[in-house]
Image 1 (spheres, each protein chain N blue to C red):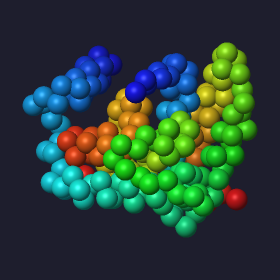
Image 2: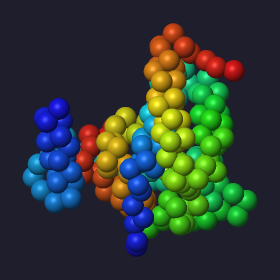
Image 3: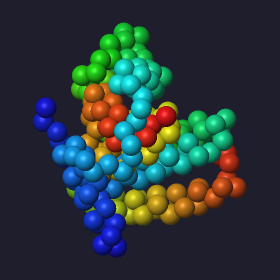
Image 4: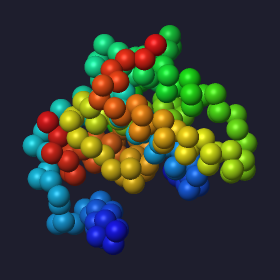
Length: 80
Length: 115
């Protein structure tokens, strides 16, 4: 089976996505779906970005990491 | 900085060679027990082709992408669901390379202290 290797930037996006999904599992299970919906929405917004649009993708990754830090606050238990 | 680099290298070679370098004792769950739980996790993950109206059979050989119709983001999500199910953490480097049910089961069996 041919394994398609991801580019570095694609891998960065996947790692960011993984961190967000892990975050959702740290929140109270009743609110987990809210977090998952939010994550899906945010990532799907930029789904159709061109692969070569490096600056935009890099910007979005940085932005996502910053937001992740905010969301990691344990006092943040739910989003709407 | 260099220490973490070294550790990643060792972890990687351990995974490839299946040699004696282990960081966990191999899980004492049987392979069949792990496979059935892995398949249950996939079944409850409602984005796979297996959960559509015309379900695809999940076998050990099923590939996440080709047989279950998951994209790369869905695969990431599925692997995190596995981590939760077995209370383990799969490092990014390994998780990037898991593409089929069999690979996932083997990794959980040989390299984690899954419970």
